Picture 1 (cartoon, one colour):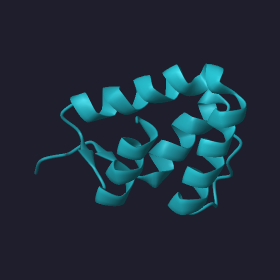
Picture 2 (cartoon, one colour; picture 1 turned 90 degrees about the horizontal axis):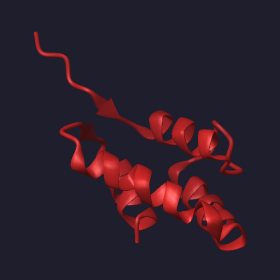
Picture 3 (cartoon, helix red, strand yellow; picture 1 turned 90 degrees about the vertical axis):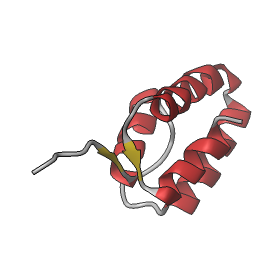
Length: 77
């Protein structure tokens, strides 16, 4: 049996919360995107940390749920 690292919305929420994003654990991915983008506009000093997180996940050999991957790609722009 092979165990695969899987990045899902819970992982994304935890990482964004650790960076200080004003999101809540029960929010949808759409709500997280809106809140995170608004936060990055009002606090642009956090953009590099979010982009770094997104780039790290995209470069690793981990499996990312498609919806989460799309959001990560949008946040890294």
